[in-house]
Length: 473
Image 1 (spheres, rainbow, N blue to C red):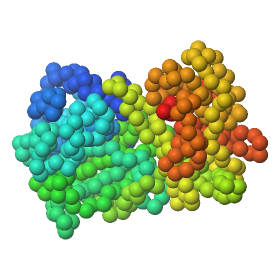
Image 2: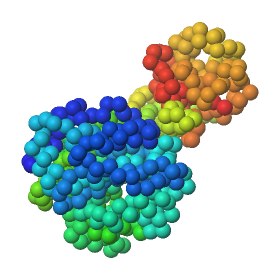
Image 3: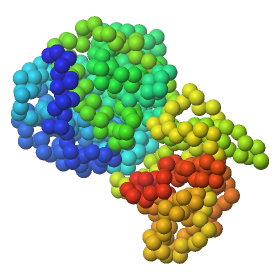
């Protein structure tokens, strides 16, 4: 099939998008529900292959009768769900009955797809990288100290797959080479020894990556990165390559305006199906305009969530110009899928070589630490009647409340809530690793307010749990 298949898939994506699951934080039970729905489809074979440390079932889903075996696994890191969601969309495509039937039937005859969705279900339910044992499955390929790693190894030994897709999410803050573009999709054909030799299996992996890169450069030019191929003797990808499977690492990073990675999910969906088709017809071996070695290496920590340029700060009566890089960390809240943001100043100084998903050039205006509103709110009702527009316009980023109001580590207001006894002078300084709460002044006029790392321009509309406005304890 020609490369047009990839672009047709993108155009038709909404037909197959599993719209019931659209956020990064998905629960194991949601995936089990989807698996149960495909169990009765004659073309799928659903099999329980083991249990996680906390006794959650891990499933293998098989489709196709072809001689070429393709293994895909996702969420070996529990907080990396983009590929899992893309798998749900791929399954929807495979069970559909429409104008792609000729391609489906061809794939069914030529390849056998073997999916392991959510290899780390315990970590997924906690939305954490490691297993509940505290072990990184991707560093457990040799000793197999986790039941999840033993399951993956058992599946590999059973099927001896020709190709393996090792699917992850990566940091939002990588750039694709020395460029102003975040690494939205990154690849690696892992080395199988310290010499980084290239055998047939690794060469095939490189060719498939080149094929995918060629497609992506037409959709997200400049946003594709590559990982360093230093051999890691404990990693699954490196060892699976050594064990004879052409292994392709796919990592979904950041893309502007795609906080839940739904667009990257769409790209994963189309890439996977296009790759299956290319493998079925050996199309990946065809020369490409974007070969493997042309993909730039990822550069770590070149992006911030918010970058404020050309700010003027005063310390000890002296003014100086500085850039301020701010990052936001997602904090899990209880056992639900809820979270809140806790933001901090990641770095200060000359950030000319760095970029922000959101940038604010204050053009020499003064930046001052946020202030705490002097009036104390005694009750929740009193707080709800507060005029936050006035509070923000006067440069206040926090309000003082009674201790009884501080029931959660986040709030739904466009300010931080603090208890008077908890306020310290250090809370109101602009310093690296300090809180990202300050105001931008043009002469005596407040121009911008930054509360917990978000730009808030005197409007309370649309604020909710995920606005990142936290209580400060």
